[in-house]
Amino acid sequence: MGTMTDTPQGGIPRARQEPKQARSRVTRRHLLEAAVSCLAEHGWAGSTVGVVAERAGVSRGAAQHHFPTREVLFTAAVEYVSEERSTALRELFHSAPAPRPAVVEALVDLYTGALFRAALQLWVAASNEEQLRPRVTELEARVGRETHRIAVELLGADESVPGVRETVQGLLDMARGLGLANVLTDDTARRARVVAQWSRIIEDALT
Image (tube, rainbow, N blue to C red; front, side):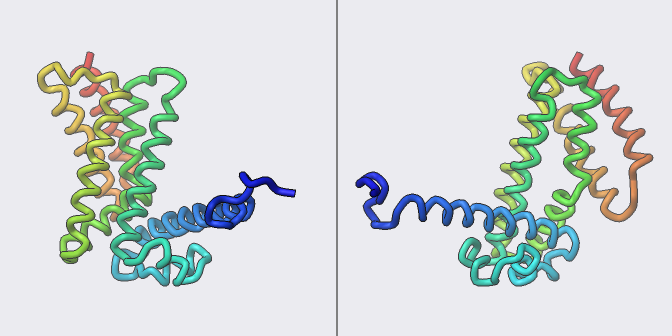
């Protein structure tokens, strides 16, 4: 027989609550990942809640339970994957300090995949959608600050030295530009040369 601690005040046994909460978290994650994929592939106009729900393998009603509007869904999706990528970037160099060229290359890689394409579609939509613009503006500012902090940490940059903060920000701006160029064409060869040059610039500026 169960004890009093087996049943919360609401009367639903914890053994039943926990699997339901776990399923809810899985559904939410599937929706967020599907939203990023749809946005990167189809753009804002072709990415509806219904399309995302179908890709995620859930009903439209379940999708709207987690995300009542399309604006909430897609800003949450880009934020979620940004956080995942930031975590992965930190863990990539967690065990030991990395050579700065490897860090530069990893930072550039953040801007050349599906996440950046999805974010770009969101920015374009926000320029035309008044209700979306404040969400995207706030999200971009937050993601930008976090990426800058990670870059400073991984590069071992001392921002008390004049010009270092601007050098790190210039690296991130350059990476974003390379990501933009990669949207239309495969820019791999030119990107490799630019990254190599920026690695030398960063090494000289931070040493």
